[in-house]
Length: 571
Image (cartoon, rainbow, N blue to C red; front, side):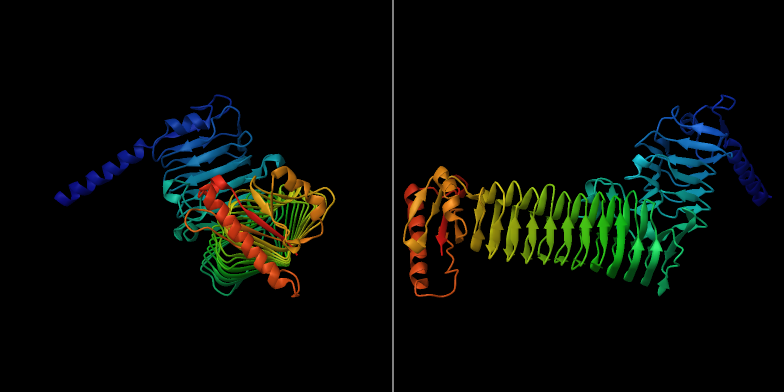
């Protein structure tokens, strides 16, 4: 009897719970409970259902529509959400939300699901509502979402993006999607979803998890592959999406003959991947063309990025290579940040804002590249170290900007006709410029500002009719040692030497003046050995001693105050 009463009470409790769930009707013409989905969502409670009558729900709504409790939104045929430009449409922050049979006219982000579980999206249609809003637009952003089910949905020119938690104070040091969210440290952010029976631009939208030795079907219109080993993607076109293809936490990946044009977020995106080769990848008019994050031993070769907002990105990558590729008409041609040991080899960059940009990127290597017509900078080195050899930087605004960087060698390179400066160095240490050729029409071949320590410029040729050969700090020492002349020139006199110094091979050594022992680095002879080499070396050393003695007499031990002493030796 007691058990029977307990069971009856449980049944009655469940019935009471079901009875409390409400169904609200939203109709544009005022025949329902509400005229806007915004009002209905705010009035609803966990477990409620909102029926969206046929009509367009746009200007009357307040976007984003926030779903912060488990609610079901179900549309009649012809129910359309139409957001203004650059607005998120629906923000999901609760577990158990369901959206069904709604058309989304996307002009930025359709559904953004943050740090939640078990969202269901079924029988919905997502369409890019405005071509001018393509950049950064996506149908569904899963940011820290687990166990999402997306079934029987249709996507046109926008797609699905999977990543980690929104940015917070805890994101420091993690791989991130700049300004948006973390890349996704938790594997379940990628692997726990169901994406089934969906199409994009009339072709299958594939989602694979944990499938080894897989070759992706060539009819793919979109691809998300997670935790796959020995994955092959060949001869597919994933253009006109948000992320054309996303490969996460996989190994031994081969991409070949892939097109990913006109994608709003990333064309080709690899995150936390080990050992991959991308060959003949074509990206055009895409936000980020080829984007590699948190990955190791990835080679991008024989690929082309044209007219993208950003061309090729390597961030938090180790021992990755871009080679034999061409990047043209982009913002950053190549951007490398917070990685180690990455390489750029035999690539061409033309008509980009920045040809190559290294930021917090140690031990980078640039070899045999051609960088031309950069609208801002050909080679930008910020808080990084690299070796750059056999490279040409020409016909841009500034050839090289080296700033707050260290232990960099630029050797056997050509810098010409960069309008503002062929090379600018500000605040750094350990820069070595060796056997480089500076020429053409420019305001300055070599401009140095701020604090430079242990800087060496040697065996370089400076030519040109209009350039100030050297723009150096106020106090510098020019010593044409071949003639045994030692003299301190003023800034005005120094710039006036441009014509007289043209075509000479010169070496510059910078004193280290950060307190303590002061010592000038003086190069040894730069031309082929001859009878005067020993005499030149002796003269250079004497000049260095004179510089240090002069500094001791002035009592200026702060390098930022004394600026620089430079010794120029004409060979």
